[in-house]
Amino acid sequence: MAVNDRKRIFIVGGAGVDIQATSFEKIISQDSNPGKYSVSCGGVGRNVAINASLLGFDVDILCTLGNDTNGNTVLADFNKYGINTFHILTVGDAETSAYMSLHEPDGEMYAAVSSMQINDFLTRAIVETKMELINSCSACFIETNVSAEVLDYITRNCRVKLFLDTVSEHKSQRAKNVIGKFHSIKPNLQEAEILCGFTITSTFELLKAADYFHRKGVENVFISLGRSGVFFSGQDGQGIAVCCNADVKNVTGAGDAFIAGIIHADLSGLSIEGQAIWGTAAAILALSSNECVNTALSSESIKEVISGGGIYVKKF
Image (cartoon, rainbow, N blue to C red; front, side):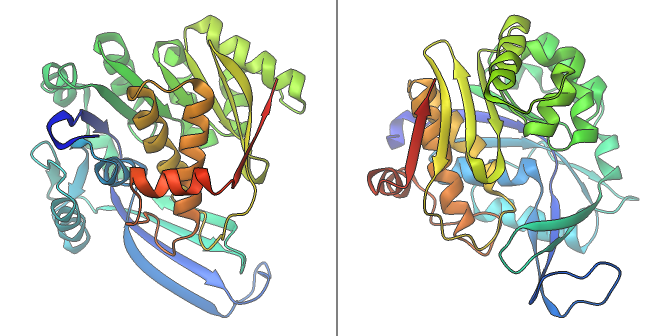
């Protein structure tokens, strides 16, 4: 993306700190497991914003932060990456969001706890004041850490391409009644089951779920299958994109990189298959980093991953 052709996207979502612990050996439940931990900035909205900035977008973010040490750290992090922080809501009597995850030695997540009550301060009334700006952007990304009321208002009033990450099984229900308003969605398998209302255990049922979402109005469907890849479905094709040889150091943030990748690919005019490949390459780069965002992410690094043959596509 040329400097004089930068596109602006608007992010509505969560930002906070990630506290990530990794056990040296396989985790034993209800016991003390020796390991290591790290603290870094995170949150789905924050991660997508940083990844999008690394891919050449101008980025505005609307999120909530506490007037505390963690909030100041996140704010400085946004400024470091050139994110427009003008729209951030600082809540003086609330704690900045925190996401605490426990990982196996191979990087797979064992469990996580989130403390994100501050997101409730992001109300419809606040979003209303931002809609004109949102509609002046090339795209808007939103995730289900925001309330169902905010999701409803944005989906009814947004006139640009809307991208959705459903975040978790519980929070995905917030988007169920408005799912057809999104241009592109990226649930995982369990979140997709909640959204479409039936179990997905086969390729046939994946295709059935895609048909359900398309009939609702979703143009592009991406369903994360974990280590089995990502299922994709759009007007110009269906299939599964699989990562063949990733150096997995950390799975937190891979889905956020994927989202930034597909937004970039979509706005660049790539096919649904091209978007899935581009997003998977971005996710591979995230997996290879100890942080939830790989600062080496760029269009050039994604192209290198793709040309290296690390992604296999099975078409239907």
